[in-house]
Length: 245
Image (cartoon, rainbow, N blue to C red; front, side, top):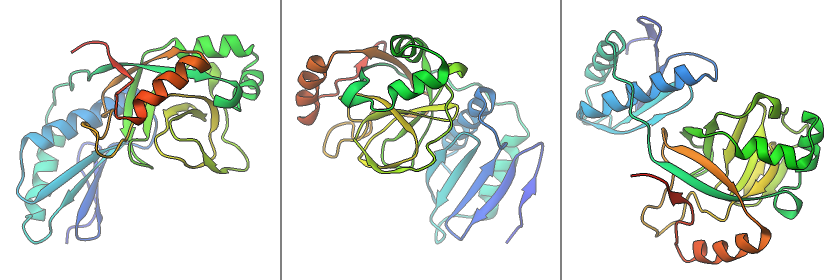
């Protein structure tokens, strides 16, 4: 089987006999994410035989295929053709307004993160809820959404000792990233809030709320509003609101 190859930047890496990774860089960068998303969309339009799924990340797209029906050389050739052509920028995805209860029991690290940034807790909430974010990738846990657009002032090194678990749907900061959590699980990120929205809810349509390329706005809410919305979300309500489309 062909070894790693590079044409105009991208590198193909084989992941066993059922997948390959097409890597475009090694950094967190909006332009790089846009390139990955454009490539992923163009590749999916080809409907290559045997390709079952593609998974875009910050810097690469993983192509998962059925080794019994896929022609790996055809997939590689398609990847290289796409890499050598100018791809249209993928249109911006759905815009969501996501309610978040910040601080106190919902965000046990908010005061510490604010102190690290040299801000009051209120200023940190305003700075975090101010930008429009984009979903760079979904992974780690089902529905866990990594977001681009964090105010650089809020960048905070990960915890020296990760927690064994943090609550589902936590809003957290790790390094220069912020994220919307999904399921309860381990984390070394700093928890600053929690949304009643469920990015992943088995049995709900859609089961996964956010997709790569979607846009996110946070709306601060009170503890009382969080409880009311959480009850609806537990029954399958989306809670996060589509702002357009």
